[in-house]
Length: 157
Image (cartoon, rainbow, N blue to C red; front, side):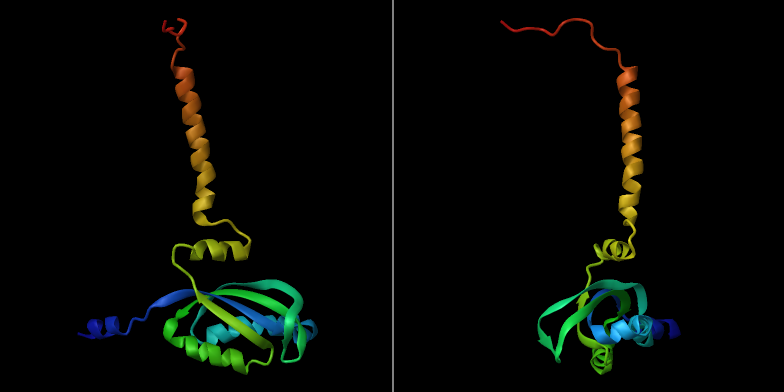
């Protein structure tokens, strides 16, 4: 019976992509402190950070809270969906975060997105060149094993 109760408490863990718009002045003064606070915020919500990196720094289309320039920080993480309101609140309270956008990723593309953020290739893409090499070797073996026809092709009149 204890295992049934434990099974009922199992929560769905989803993979998310979050783009943070950071105060570029704070980031310029303390890049390590600001960038380390973002994964820490997710880990405090029992999340697992998969990838976290600087995306871009650019002029904003319109001022946000008096800021004309922003730093974009991209993070991929796994977390229970029920913890999302608490993460949103933590982002609002973090003075370095001007805005944030969280998207739930489809399980089919999540490994590819995380691998791209890490600067790696996705697991399926790594296996593809091996298959191509095997296929090429098989083709060469078949063409060299089959004798070529010496008779001219038949013509129809």
